[in-house]
Amino acid sequence: MSFSPAGPPPGAQYPAPYPVPVGPPATTAVLRSPLGLATAVVVLLSLVIAADVLDIVAEAGRYALMDTAVGDVLATVDQSALNRSDLWIGVAAALQFLTLVGAAVLFVIWFHRVRTNGEVFAPNGFEKGRGWAIGGWFIPIGNLWIPSRIARETWVASSQTTQDGRLRPADSGPVAYWWAAWVASELLSWLSVLVTNGGSQYADDLRDAAGFAIAADAVDLLAAVLAILFVRKLTAMQHRKATEGPFALS
Image (tube, rainbow, N blue to C red; front, side, top):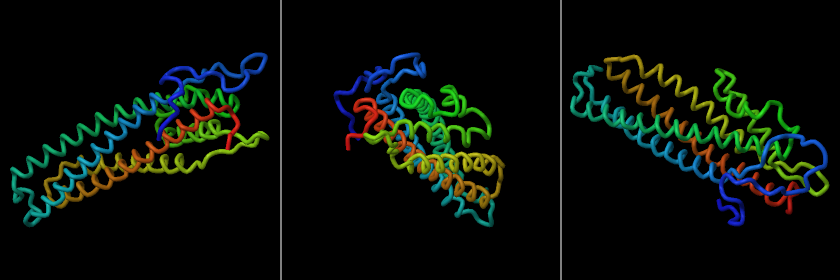
């Protein structure tokens, strides 16, 4: 996706796309470009995908190695191969952690930026204040639905309208698909910790744990891909509304 080269530099304030109404402002929010943050988020999410692929390969090697055990006895597995497997899984896990933390931090910053822009577009379009775009992610259980609600409200606020004022929201599929994949990824990650932290000395258990880890990685990879699509689409919607104004040109 490419953006207009005439747009403001990343982080800059957009010029007012339409006349500012006379009287007290409906909101103190300031419209700022999300382009630079979106690019950084996409890069970090791409690294998350790469780390997931590496872990899938490492776990697949572990899975195949456990099939060589005799009578489910771990001691019958080639110990040098097992040590190499442990090393690769450890490296992959470290890369997953680092890339995921970096992507999460930048994503939340971007999320707050687009939520703030959404308030400029539609001051009365949100149930909760701007701070929830950050705080909502840190509330146990609540973080499984609060950010989703904010994302949907921001999506609607960032949509242009027809000339007669009727809202013409873009297809909200990217929001729903990304959120469903993210929740599934979180649940599988929690279960994966429970499955892999047993310290089992049986080859079958370690093989099953590797298979579960591969499934969790695959869902996490899908969630990252859908998050990229969501970020790019919502950023493009806001850029278009900020530069063209509230009314759709076509």
